[in-house]
Structures are given as C-alpha cells and as structure tokens.
Figure 1 (spheres, chains in turn yellow, orange):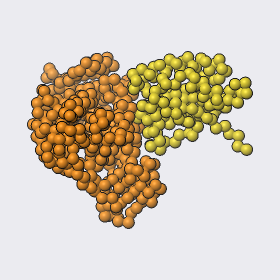
Figure 2 (cartoon, chains in turn purple, red):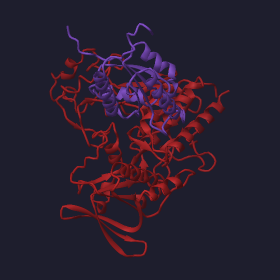
Figure 3 (tube, rainbow over the protein chains, first blue to last red):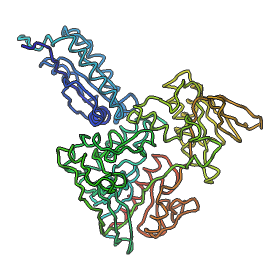
Figure 4 (cartoon, helix red, strand yellow):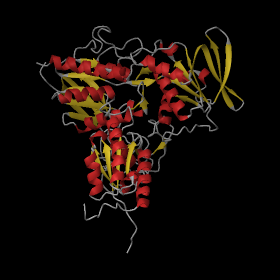
Length: 141
Length: 424
C-alpha cells in the first residue's frame, strides 16, 4: 500500500485579489500542488476564528488565508482586521497542541499568479513534512 | 427621450464603468471593443499612483462584471462604420470581425497555442514577447478566449490552406474557420465615445536614442517589464543585460511637438521611481523634467515621498541620450545653462498621450469634430465637458483629452448622468 501522506489544505481566498491571482496562475498554466481546496470569500476579514478552527478540527491538515496586499483591500481595511485576528489565532493553535505554522496568511494580488503558485507549493510541502493533523482523527473531539 | 439602448464605443476603464452604470440602472447597453479582450490600457499596469494599488485587482472585477452583466451586449473585434439619424433614434452600422473561436465552447485551456507554426511579435506586450497567430494577448486576459489573427494565420491568409494545427489540438470543438465577418445594424438612443489614447511615437525624436540603444525603453514598455503578468513576470531583464545601478527617467517627451502637457507623466514617472527603489534599493534614479506637473490633493505628498526616497529631480533645458563605449550617458543642460553628463544603465522615456489610432475616421463616421490636437471636440470645455456638438453623442475618458483613471471614471459617470436625466 502506498502510505505517502497527501495533505488536505483548505484555502480561503479573497474574491478581489487572491482568487483572481489563483485564476491567473491557472490560465498561465503554472504547476500547483493539488492539496489545496479553494474556497472563495469576499474578503480575508470574512474568515473568523470559527471557520479556521472548524477546518482544523474537522480534519484539514493546514489552512491558508490569502487576501489583498496591505493598502489594496477592496473594503479599505479588511485585510488589516484579518491580520490582527490571525495573530491571535496563532496563539490559540498552541493551546490546541497544534503547530502554529499549520495556519498561514499570505498577501497575493490579482497579477501575482506566480507568487500564488509559490505560496501554495511551499505551504503544501511544509504540511507534507509536518504530517497529518493530530486532531483530525481524535475520537475525543 | 424614451428609455432605450445606448451604444458605448471602447471597453477601457471609462467605457466599462459607463456601461455598468447604465446596465445597473436597467438600460440596455451595446458595448463595442476593437480588440479581442476588454479592459483597455489600464490592464497593462502593475500598480497605479498615488497609492501604488494593484491595477489588476482593481480592474479585473469590473471586467468580470461587464462580461456577466445581462444588460450589456458586448461585441469584440468590432468597430463603428456609420451613424444616421438623430439623438433618440440613431441608426448605426457596426462591422464585427470574425474571432474564429467560439466564446461558448472555448474553456481557455490554451492547448491551441503550442501547435500553431506562426510566431509574431506581441503588440500588447510592446513586442517584448512573442505570440502565435492564435493566442490571448497576455496571461489573465478577459475573456480568456483566444482569437485568430487572419492576416498571419497560414490557413486564413492562404499560404498553407490545409493547416489546421489549432483545430486538431482543440478537444472542445471551439475553432471554426468558416466564421465570417459581420455587419450589424442597431438602433440606439445615444452614443458614448470612449476610445482612449495612444502614446507619442518616441522614435520620431532621435535625440532620445530609442531603438538605437537597446536599453532605452518607452514608458509602456517599462510598465509591461515590471508587470507580474508581463513577459518577464516582473523581473527587470533588460534587452542588453549587465547590471542595473542607475536609471534615468525623461519626462515631457513629445510635449513640445504636441503642444500640450499630458498631466499624468510626472506622476507615473514618480511611480516608476517608487517601484525601482523598492526593487533595487541602492539604485541611483534621476528624473529629468522641463516642467513638473503634480496637481491634485494626493499627488504632492506622493512627489515628496519620492524625493525623500533619494530620487533626484533634475530640471533641464535640453537633453540627449548618447552612447559612451559600451554604456549609455545622458547629456543635459540645466536651468542655469550649465552642461552636465551622467552615465546611465537604463533610460525610460515618458511620452505624451496622443489621440488613439482611428480617431479621425471615427469622428467622420460620427459626424463630429476634432479639436486642434486631434482629440474629440466638446461643446463647451468649461460647462459641458462630455457633450459633443452633435446632440446625443458624448465623449469620455482619454478620447476627450489626456487624463488619469479617476478623471476618466468621473467623465463616464457624468455622461451616464446626462443620459439618465434625459430619459422620460
């Protein structure tokens, strides 16, 4: 049996920049690891702590949140809220006994198809090395 | 005037904004675009001044809205041929060229590019990259559907009639060589002209050494060079490589010849300096200007910020780009009349904005006049800046004169206001 670990990563991409960047990476035919399941949201600040924690508790091996570059937010300051929330969330992961770097926040603009592919591939490699999410199959949860 | 269909010519930022506003007010819009993609010149920019916002992030949602809006009837590769009648009941004739690729069947996979045997300079990328006879002009073009260039396609220009390399590569049956050019007849209530601008041909002025020296770039070439979706993916790879330590940006190229200041070049030249400082922090950047033009409430601080970053603004009376052995140098006479020489690795020329190609012909078809610079004439520059002398025809954006993105959008909104106010 092939026991090679294939990670499951949930990617929340903002509609205005990062999702368009992902689109560009696709139409430019860049190679992107298939571990990421993309969910389009209107803004990175739409991602509240519950969505990230639920993803992890229900078995995601990693969570990527991507939004517009600071200063470029379609709603002026959504990505700043996302950044603050993110800093707190990282601390909560520690409490859950999860490595904080299973959660990543990145800024990807609509023209950065290449950057998108690099972010996804590096993150996927990193999660592959970190191994499966220890909470995923914990019967206590 | 009864509520009726409106014709918008040109799907750049002004044309798209006007179409969306009208469509969202429940008005049917027919939008013409002469290229095979929408977005105009704005989609060529990586960032826009003064906030260095990502232009693609700003424009691509607008492009998507235009493509998906049910009230907008979009005709690409189309141009206006003739207008008859008067405001409220214009009869227009539109010539629509064949795309040879179905917008419905094509999924934009791009499998058809590779097998095409024709290699062409990509005009969208200012000739900095190559494309095939079937291609989209750039990655991320919207709609992401290629068009066949009938002049260069071997099958369509008759040089190799049996070639069907792209058709064989397409598994979605999207390519149809039998498609024909069409003539469309429409009745519209009003016409919005948003055909945009071109840039002054810098090759006309030999003192700048454009095309003579490989590392002299025009502003639009530089825009594409630093765009992440451009030919070099944002890397500053020069035509003649070898260290990039000093950059000279020359403003006001063609201003004297055209007889007006375009009003945007100083700001985008400062934008280039911002970008270059970010990319190569220790680079020496000199901006050569004859007059600085930095109006507007947020522009002054952007200029001051640029100066603080260590960018030199040098006033000059005359300027030349010359070669010194293997490298370039700029010889200039400053305001005090003293001559100086500066060795330089790369030169960027910021040319004047000029009327778009085909403006004259379009003015004839529309039955309206041009001003002395060749832009569309308006009824009254002060009080009706978007109405032309012919009732029901409006001109917005850079078709009316050089301007930046916010001004183009304001004009689009103004013209839409005028049209909506005239409906009973």
